[in-house]
Image 1 (cartoon, rainbow, N blue to C red):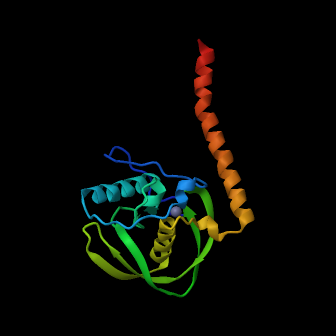
Image 2: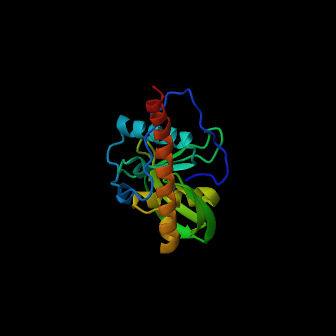
Length: 196
Ligand SMILES: [Zn+2]
C-alpha cells in the first residue's frame, strides 16, 4: 500500500536487497500464501528485503506475495523516519469493528487510487520475526493497511472491490503505461544505432 500524496522518498546509497514488485494483472499476485513454519535467518532476510523494497518504492506496506514469495508475511511502516516498522508473520484477524471507507493505493497497481470499505478496527494475532505471538488492536490507517496487505496473502487486490468496468479500465491503463515505459527505454538505444 502507498500514501496518496508524496512522503517517504526513496533513500539511496544504502545496502538494500530490493526485490521486483509484481504488478496487476500478473497472475502470480493471485497465489494464496502458505503459513511460515521456520522462524530462521531466511525469514529475517525476507522481512528486511520487504522493508527495503517498500521504502524504495516508496510505500507504507508490502506483502511477500507482491515480491513473488508466497509466505504469510507482511510489513508496514506509516512513519517517515522508519520508526514505525511492523512485521507480521502468519497474521489472523480475530475481530472486526465498524466500517471505514478509505482511498487506497497499491504498489502492485501503480498510480491508481480508489475508495475501499473495510473494518475500521481490527484485532490481530500474528507472530514476529522471532516467532513470538503478538495480539493487538489496530485502528485508522494501520487497520486499513493490515487488511489491505492481508488480502495480498489471499491473492486478492484492492481493485477486486471495484466494479468490473473500473478494473478493466485500470488494467488497460497500466498496460498502456508499461508499453510506453518500454518504448522510452528502447528509444535511446535505437538512436545510438543510427548515430554511427
Ligand atoms: Zn497492495
